[in-house]
Length: 295
Image 1 (cartoon, rainbow, N blue to C red):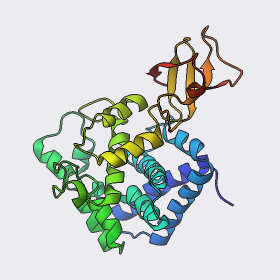
Image 2: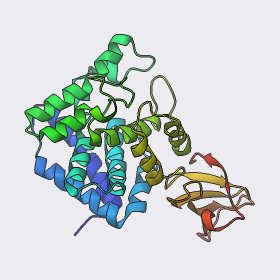
Image 3: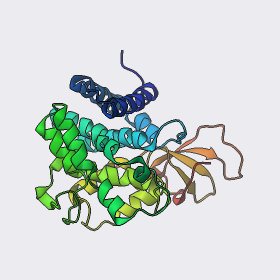
Image 4: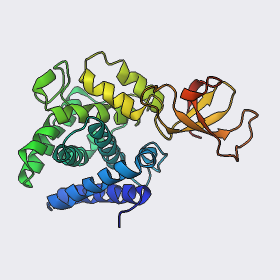
């Protein structure tokens, strides 16, 4: 019996944590088991897609789970969704998901005083962090992962304009699956606090990557990713023109600025008990005024 999206998400988080611990203490990983975990995620994307995506954008207790583990799982789920919408072959989807979950294993080789430093990083510290794709690929090679997965991991911080790392590849030189990973890695990273900036919430993060102008990301993949995630991602909150507060429950790919929303707070400021749904694309009386943070 397949798990539901809540259970599967939490299982995946605990496994990513365990994999990191195993690598840290010289253990090994079972490739078949990781591929099965990705297959389970694909099943949920096919059967509980909107609910699974909402889990990505839900609030989490960062005291209990490290941010890198949350990011790995979120990037995996969103990368698979974009991959499905790109009609990738099943084998490519599995490899993409495995790479997304394991791409930052090399962070275990970066000194903790650098990794968790509060405040600006020095040039030497930035250079050390930028070695993590190389560290990750070396770890995966030692564990017997395929060259295809290793190449995806190695290229996931390369940029479309050639200014990425570790090898300064550009455009079609970059592994195609890495280009997908790059978009979702950038998007999820924007939603997390960094020493040099505060996090962005869903709408602002999407707006930022839309304005990339062919610098970091493959424009064709970016276009599909925006349609897949939505301008206002599932689970995010918006204010409508009538002063009501709503939660996005589904996106309209043809009209990404007009999702389907559920009323949470009525226009008079009272909590909504009706679970009223509004398809903004099919109702000219409503439009989104702004994105709001969950409180």
